[in-house]
Image (cartoon, rainbow, N blue to C red; front, side, top):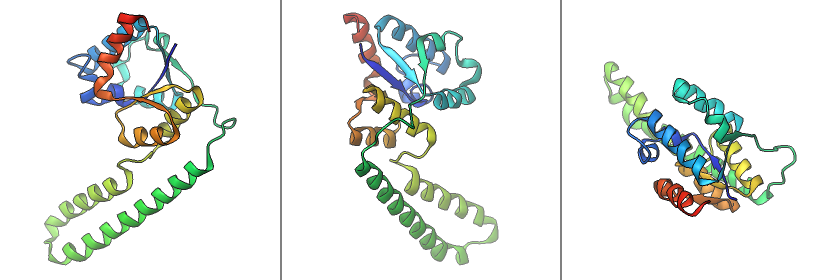
Length: 194
């Protein structure tokens, strides 16, 4: 029986939850109904569940925890290949340098030519580009790391729309289901009994 490890993006990304229903609540109910019928085991780290509760609050039905097992990875007992850590550190360093270059370039080109009332827009654009350079396509939170480690530990299948999380899951050999195929996969599992 397959084990799926869920990220919040399954329930917060409109492109993913929209496959299951019009509203986030209806989509979550439909997903849980399919999950119960499919026979797969669903897991979510507690940090991710806490994040989901903050985002969705009352939209999370009481039976969520009966269908999705809340379990964190065994962080202190797990062996992670050192090569992955070195690659992660190099990527973070390159992103920091790229973000700094963007900030410097932006500040030099724009600041003196912008009227004081337009400087807020300049700062917002800088923040957006800086955030994109540093965070897009990388594991950038404790919750992301928990999902990755739990999927790695359990030899589970990652369910996430987060590009960075999916990229790193692929690097460490975690199985992935494309988020745009999730509904079809769940329906197929129901049809063929998991």
